[in-house]
Each structure stands twice: as structure tokens, then as C-alpha cells.
Length: 231
Image: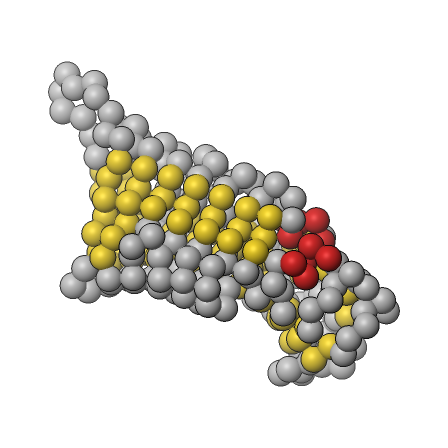
């Protein structure tokens, strides 16, 4: 693990439009990728070994292309609106802005997001595999937040973060099939409307609060796999 910093030579003024990180031989980790000194806009990721970039990407980077990468990519996008294309590994991508366009590619991927970075304008494409939307922080997600979400099968939260969810037609169109409550401290709340037409499994958490699943208008049976609490 270490930093990579790109800088211009003395007197140079040209930008470095793109860089390529080729992760091979063993799994690799970069603590900070500094490209602000050369105004790099595109990060290409290639290779076949897992790659983690620990700190959020530099705000100069607006495109991440990992379409040919076969390892697992773990990184956080910056506050700059970014277009990311993933590869075939099991990626973990953290959204950095509301308008990020993220296509995860193949593999069982995770897209992590806060309340502030997910609404009807946010684009998430899961691709193939079983892909999971992970809420970070106490999060409320409404049906319209799924407007531009596709091929995402699961929704959960970071442990001990509360999740409040309302599902309807747009959530159904996204491909959602399961919700896992992860908060052990406070109540989670899931409302399933009549317009949600997918079969749904809700995995409850065991905690001191009362978790609620309101399926008054739902016309199918809700599965409760790994259920550890009655609600």
C-alpha cells in the first residue's frame, strides 16, 4: 500500500488526459491516487488481480473504465460527477455524487451510497450477477429513487445503519428481490406497495427495536429467509 502522485516536470504545462493502472501478479492496494497536478480526467483499470484504492478518487477524474478488468475493484468516487464502467470481478463502488453514472458490469457487485447521493436522477446498472445496493448511514429510500436503477437484486445497509424503504413499480422494474435489515440498534421500516410485483424476501435483524414490514397492498407472499425477529 502506498501513494501514487503524478506531477508535471518544471516548466511543463500539458495535461495527462488518462492514466492506466494495471493490477497483475498479486492483489494491489493504493492509498491515494493523486492526479490533480496533471489534470487527469480518465482512469483506466486493467489486469486480473484485485485492486483497492483506499482514498476517494481525485476530483479531476470524471471517467473510470474498468471494462476489461477481471479482478475485484474497490474504490470511492469523488464529489465530481463520474461515469464508471466495471469489469467482471466482484466490485465495491462507493458513489460520490448524485449524478454519477455507474455500470457495474459482471460479477456480484456492491454499489454503496448515502441518502444524499441517490434519487431519481441517479444511474446504477448492475449488469449480470447478483448485485447489491448498500445504504451508508441512516437512509430513507423511496420508490422514485429506483427510476434509473436496473439489474440490482438486493438492498441492504451498513451494519448498525437504519433503513427506511418504500417499494413500488420503479423498485420492481429495477429487479429488486430481497432486502436485508442490518441495524441492531434502531428500527428498520419497509413498506411494500401494490405496484411492487416481484417476489420479495425480507431478512430481519435481531435488535431491541421493532422492525416493521408493511405489505398491506402487496399481493404476493413475502419470504422471511434467515428471520431472527418477528414483526
